[in-house]
Image (cartoon, rainbow, N blue to C red; front, side, top):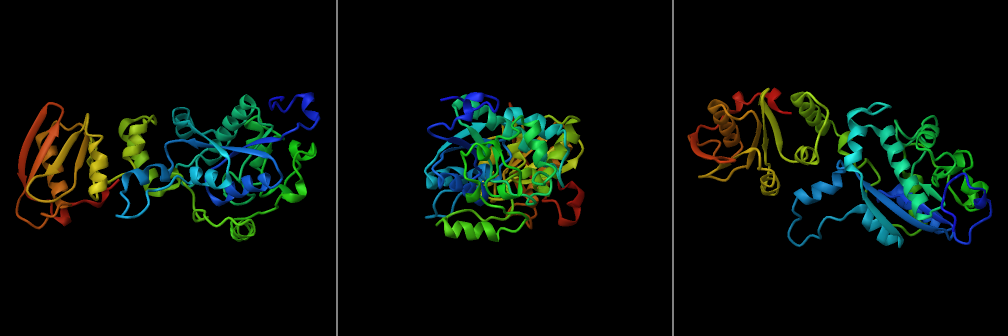
Length: 361
């Protein structure tokens, strides 16, 4: 078999078996795109990229399911299983840093670099396709569905900058777009593709019903924390505090759990909201100050930054006590632990009127 190059004359003759590699999030659109090509007898495989910012990847790990409930599922794995296709799981989080910190095409409403993200993922998928012998790639994109990356003027930008012009098929919106190489060469029957457009999902849901696809996530929204206003605010705060836009995987994980407060410019608190978050935060105690209640139920709190001043640790304890079961008691005993240091303080929980709104990150 000739590997996909997009330039090789040997590909003019139809291969015995057409192979396509798709980007699969596990949502309705990408699942439908894969199914449409499977219906044409095309050998489909998919790839799911891990950036570190997927909501589903970590909320399931942080939140414990209710007793008797099934464990959280990974939508892409679940969709691939239902489709009967091979799924490549690829971690691109290290390379993705530059996409988040310095996107060529800028951000969306918050810190979502949607256009740069799509270009990056499409380029990665095309590179994989060529290496593994797939003839073209496909996505579940729909014209007009996303305001930043799924527009008539941005689709050509994605194709050009990802180096995949003519070799990226969008089965759900293909009838509204120029023919791609797979269509022109007769590898894909264009008449069996769709021409969806706009933000509504009713046509996709109708197609899913027609194809017997019933088990899929809610078609509304997305899976990226960077589109979330609260998360973006926390990430900006981190960048401002460090005076750099660099981040680590540990940083972005911690931004997903607990209350985040910055009572002073030089330190920050992360306060668990339930037992699951307490357990999660405890795994990141190394290099930080860990604060816990001793004589009553309460949150686990992490303090990071410049934590050396006794008055700052005292304030941190009073804030943490404010979120404990003893918030209305006169005194709460707190334990403070950090690398090579431990102490116990009896504190008065901070009154509600002294908890400043601008502390909340």
